[in-house]
Each structure stands twice: as C-alpha cells, then as structure tokens.
Image (tube, rainbow, N blue to C red; front, side, top):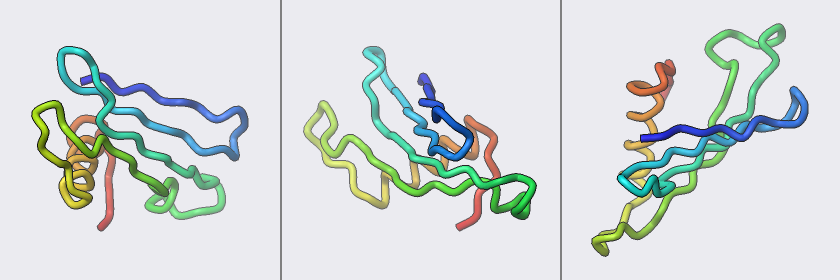
Length: 87
C-alpha cells in the first residue's frame, strides 16, 4: 500500500489523500480532508473528511459498495495512518 497526499497551495485549502493498493499500485480510495484552524477548534475537530471516492469495480469484476468503501477508509485511517476518528 502507498499513501500519497496532494497538499494545498495555502493553509486554507483541502488535502487529498490517495490510497494505492496492489502490485500495480492502483488507486483505490481518495479522501478530501478539510483542515480546521488548530488555534480555533477543539483538537477532536481539527480535520474533517469531506469526500470519499473509490474504485467502484475491482479487477475481478466485483463491485465495491459505499459501505465497504467507508469501512476500508476508516481502517486505513485508524490502523495505517494512526488517526483518531469519530463515527
């Protein structure tokens, strides 16, 4: 797995996190994350995932449902990236 981010040009822009899986590093998920101002918000609300996109059809022809995509993204964020997340 490879994680790549597109950093915003300024501190107010959104960050896009790309998650790539497999031998060919196919992009499976992209998360758009809106960062809050750490000086003006509670630590628990410092960033919010505003959008999730995913590859709908896998190479074997199976479909990825919205629920499965969200579950996978939560796992990636918590386990691999060490994020603390709320439901």
